[in-house]
Image (cartoon, rainbow, N blue to C red):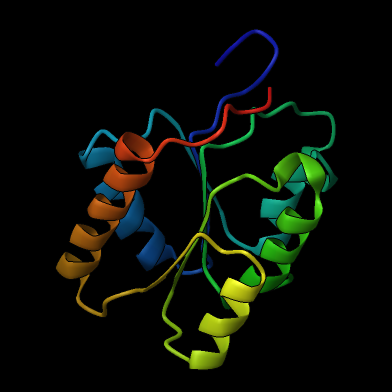
Length: 150
């Protein structure tokens, strides 16, 4: 945390507590993110990114990565992605859809909207944990992203 901004490395929007627990545990165990913020729906993710709603007045640094579930209450992952890609200050933000949907239409629409990666969650928890660790390692340690705002 800095004096002016609260720091987030990964913003994770997921409505399933079980999937969130496995994902967060895998990322923390691999020491890939100094700070993770888990939100339970797309509206909360937008509130964090845009400084609105329950996060009005809070100053977050732009995350290094946004992980989105596709099917969430209030605002789904595709709508969050639409807002991110249409908001100038967020357009370069890396976004990964981590979802249970293997529907071709969801995959195509995600890439049309500018997702950086689309990953179908494995059903097995140990496999999901391994996939998340690999995903986190790539995006947090290997990938070079633009400097964060904030």
